[in-house]
Length: 466
Image 1: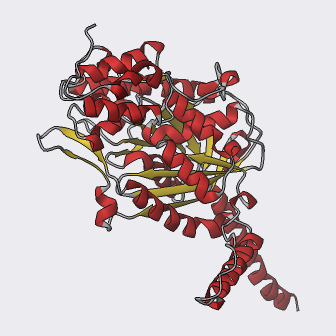
Image 2: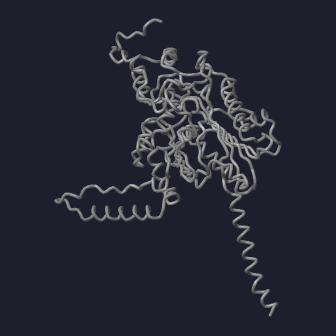
Image 3: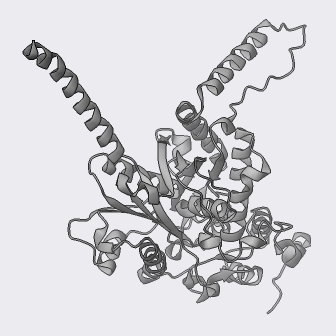
C-alpha cells in the first residue's frame, strides 16, 4: 500500500517541481529598467534664433525661396530656442567635418551620461554583462561600443552589439536585443546606449527634402541600465510587458521615404519624402493591430469588435437613395489599458497624427510637445526625454502602464509597454527647469526676427550686411 502511494505521489511531486522551475525561469527572463540618464549638453552648445540664422546664412547654396521654406518649417516645427547642436556648428566647420568631430560628440555624451548612471545606481562598469549601442549615422573602427568598453575598462567577456543605420526607432530595437539575451542568461546587467551623431551629417545643399532635416534634428542621448535579476526588482523603475516591431522595408514607397542619399550635385543628405506621413501611418496601423491584443483588456477588444460589426452592417444596409446613418466611433480606447503615452518627437505633425489616431488629449501629448520644444528631435533617444518629462511632473505611479511609440527609417514602427514598478518623481534631465513647463506659448521668435523675408522679391533680394 505504501509502495502504491509512493508511485501515486511521485508524478505529482515531479509535476510540482517542473512547475516551480518553469515559474522560476520565467521570472529570470523578465526585463527591468533600474535607472536611466538623459544627456544635457552644456549651455555653450545651445541653438538660439540668432545663431540659427547665422548658420543658415553661411550656406551659400541657399536663395530666397529656400529661406522662405526654412522659415516656414522652423516656425511650425514646435522647436524652441534651447535645443543643442554639436560643437562643429559653433566653429563654423559644418560643411567640412572630420571623423574626430563625430567621435568627440559621442564621447562627450558617453562620458557624461554613462558615468552618472552607473555612479547613481552603484554599479561598476565591470559588472556590465551586455552592452548595446545604437548611433545610426556614425560608423567607426573600432566601433562605438568598443570605445565605451575601452574607456570604462569593462570585462573581456562582455557581450556587445553596435547598431548603425536603424534610424529614430533604434532605441526599441536595442531593447529587443536586450530582452532576447535576457531569455537565455540569468542575473545579468545590460547597458543600453542610444544617440545620434549630427557632426558629420549636416546637409550643405539646397534640396528642400534634405535641408528640412537640418531644422529638426538636435543633439542628445540616453544611457539605460537594465537587468533580469529578480532579486533586484524592488529597485527597478519599469518592467517590460511586451514589445512589437513592424518593418515595411519590403514596400519600395516606405523604404525610399526616409533615406540618406546624394542630391543632384553629389552632396550627401537625409531625404524626407512627401510620402513619409503615408508610410508612417501604414506602419503605425499594422503595429497597433499586433500590440493592441497584448495591452488592452478583453472587454475593450470585444467592444471594438461589436462596434465594428455594427458599423459594417449599417454601411451594407444603407442604399443609394437613403442617407447613411451618422458615423459610428469605432476607434479603440487605448486608455483602457494604457495610462501614459510616450511618443517619438519626430515633429509636430508626427505628434498631432498619433494624437488624432489614438484620440489622445492635450494632457497625453504634453510630454512629447514639451520635449520637442526643449530638446528637438534627438532621434532614437527622444523617447527617454519624453519619459523623463512625465517622471519630473510626478505623473508616473506604481502600477501605471506606459506605451512607447517610435518611428524610423526603413520604414519601421516599434512600440512597447512598460509597467511602473514604484512611484517615480526624479527630474532626471528636466530637474532644474520642470517648473517652467509647459510655457504659456510654444511659439518661437523666428517669424518675429526673420518674417520680413516673406515680403522680399527674388529679383531684388539681397541679404543685409552684418
